[in-house]
Amino acid sequence: MLSQASGYAVTALGFLATQGGKPLLIKEMASACDIPPAYLSKIINTLARRRLVHTQRGIGGGVSLTCEPKDLALYAICEALDDPILHQRCMLGTAECSDERACPAHTFWKPHRLQTVQFLKKTSVADVAAFESKRRWHQ
Image 1 (tube, rainbow, N blue to C red):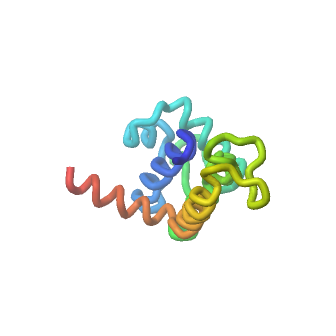
Image 2 (tube, rainbow, N blue to C red):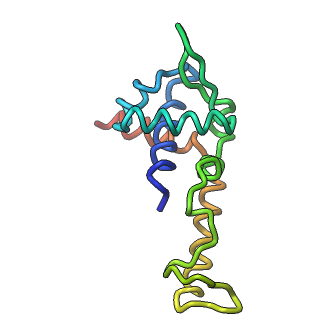
Image 3 (cartoon, rainbow, N blue to C red):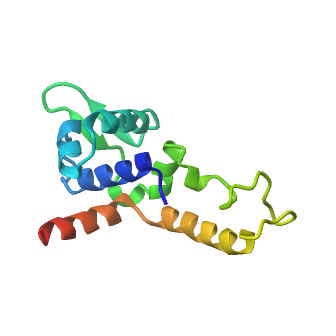
């Protein structure tokens, strides 16, 4: 499961991608995605420092993506926010868990963790935007 920050970032950037490249204010994104504005502001600030989004103050300003939504993988968002899902951790919390010193869940968790990382690498913000568009259309 993604951290709350990564989940919020994916949701907000998916919504941003549905707007056809138009910059959006953080408060608009936060309202549309039901995310606390102050928390989203911190997330966007981090993503801007990592150059995944561009922010512009003033009239006509807001947040915009720095690349096409199809070219922004969820993995890059998780990486920018240092999401724990990308860290090689034992699912049971064992201090040392490797192929050489495996915990009882290691043989189960290792392939699932790899599948999760592969999913994050192949799924893009465009995929999230398509889902969001469809979901909002059916409300």
